[in-house]
Length: 385
Image (cartoon, rainbow, N blue to C red; front, side, top):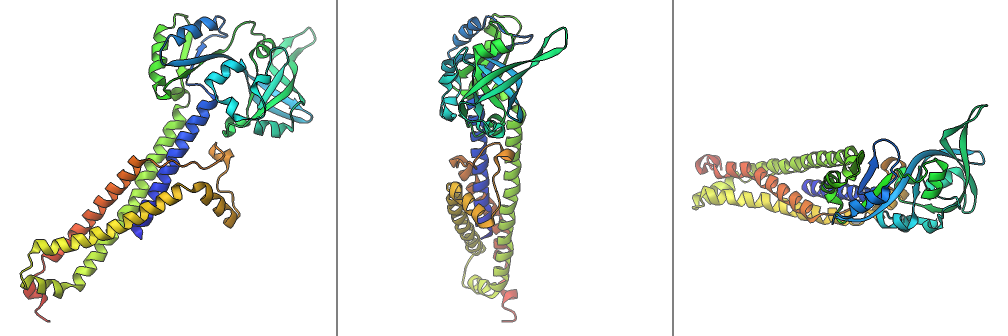
């Protein structure tokens, strides 16, 4: 039972960590970009040339210009700060997954000059706006007049709501057409940068280095998703490693319980071992008996743990709501954990590693008591029988 609990816990936790890591990566990259090219000092005017240069790299599938600035949204009595991203809907669909995230309206409703806006679901709920409502976007850059510095203000119509499942984006991102963003922030024909989508997201660091070396435009910064979210993913990886080590200690404790079990068995069977020895059993055969006993305990525990762990890991979407119903507590809050559901991904390599290490620990735990059994002296054991 101890081994089964330890192995089951390891499989469930590692599956959740794997799922969490992959889900975060896919959701972040569904809104962010694999590689981003920006200018160090202000706007990028000849972005089309930069995009063409980038797409000469065979790893780059698509490119899209963007404008990214800060702003404040106001509706009735509600006010919320937000990141405003100006996009070209057709181009944005090629580098991001907003089309699949749309809950209401469409990204295509963003048209130049119409001043439409698409909000994250949590941001829309916080402001209390619905499709077709007019809300005010206030830009931080002000207009200098003889009387005072006045903020630039423009009214936008809500034309869509998206839900990426990432609280950071759902509560703090607003999309507008790139031409409207350029007009509001007085950028002229310049953009903030170009977003790139790659065939292989894990090749992003290499592609970023290649682009930095080959793009001819001076003063450009090329960054990839592993750098922009490096600390976050490192923290997740470190947490996974530490959780694995901690849970392997549970398996180790369970394996050492086998030591005490077999030591007690040896003490109990002292006379029986001595009789077997007098009948001609060799120390090696006695040792084999107890190694087999420990191995069988380990195997049964491993099989039970793997079966239970896989059953829970593959059905967390049922287990978590059931536990929340029973306990009345919220076990998964997306405001804390970034995403709106507990993900799980079972990797065969993880299961094989867990089973292998656990079985080795079990086998090692059985060796000492088995050796003790093989050293029983028949004359001493049977003296008082």
